[in-house]
Image (cartoon, rainbow, N blue to C red; front, side, top):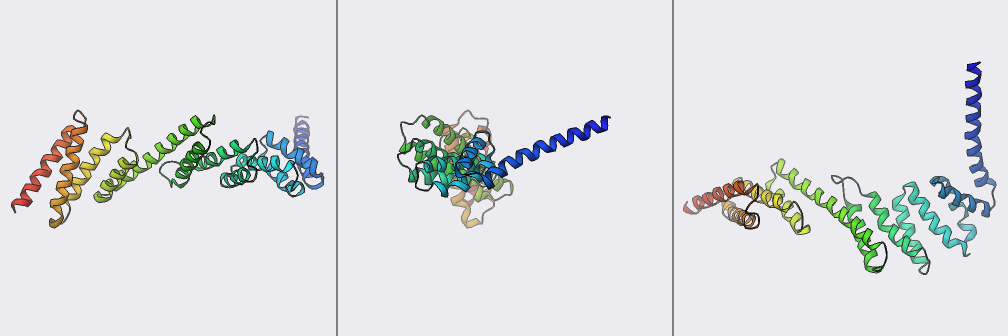
Length: 269
């Protein structure tokens, strides 16, 4: 008896699945343009993203040049975004804003361009092309829509993206230092401070610049050591002037002392 109940339950479940599937397929294959349009909006509202996208694609041509096309285009871009096709959604939101400059959805479309790139931004250790693209597009939105309610949100998202880029730059500098490429580490950390002058990690970065620069000078050929120890002195003195009570102060003082002594030896020789 129990076995029969399980079989019956399975049949009912499968019937429900096939019924749901057949409803979509029936609309897609046999529905009129109006029925497919209504179905697309319903699926979009229910976050059935692929179904919504499929039905919108099937009706775009039928409404070409008609008033309904504007909302179809916007909703189609939303369906792409909903499905995680962020690169395509950015393209279609941009195209929508250009095609319908007077639309009430234009501002939202313009915001969704950078937000689509933001959604493609990966973990900070990976390539940050889309993170940088999101920053540029958010800033463009702010510049072209300065009174928008979205401006504060854009600024927060820009800050979030910049933090990720800064972490990426710091990780790169650390990597160069750990593999003993001290020249690249010095350059990388200096660029970090140039790109992120207000970095909360500026103290540690300046310490690492002085440390990497000293190591670079020490391992350089004799003809290059003088100028590189001089550079180390400058980095160390800059650190001490800015961070006199730092946890790294004693270490930087040792770097400066050792660098000056090395420089004296080179000059005396």
